[in-house]
Length: 123
Image 1: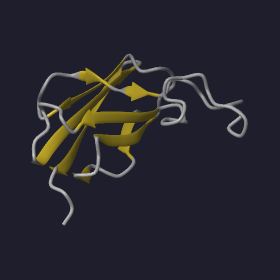
Image 2 (image 1 turned 90 degrees about the vertical axis):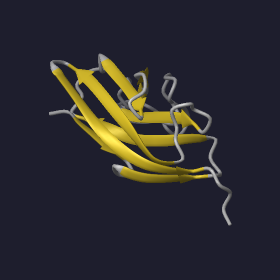
Image 3 (image 1 turned 30 degrees about the horizontal axis):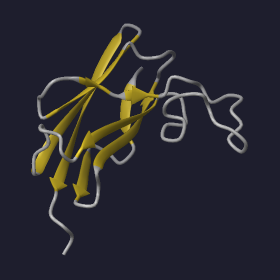
Image 4 (image 1 turned 180 degrees about the horizontal axis):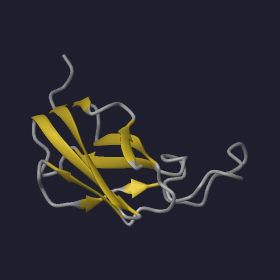
């Protein structure tokens, strides 16, 4: 059974000092690379997000890394990273809703993550 498990839960907060809002997590139950991994912010257009496609077995983490685009961000098979620019036109001050969709095998699942965005400097 596929599950989308955000590292910091389904309710998060971001404030001023970030250039990109980053949502990390794990897709559990994957047996192969997903056919679809997309997100949409506040019911906007769907966009792809990265899910680590390479298994860890045999990776020498002391002297080397995996040959994948997410080698330093997503170490484990099924780990994901969604990055949203603080300048994204769909990003709102205050409450935002992020929908993640994964299709793998015969299953398609989705998960809603809500987060607050505050671009004001810390006082």
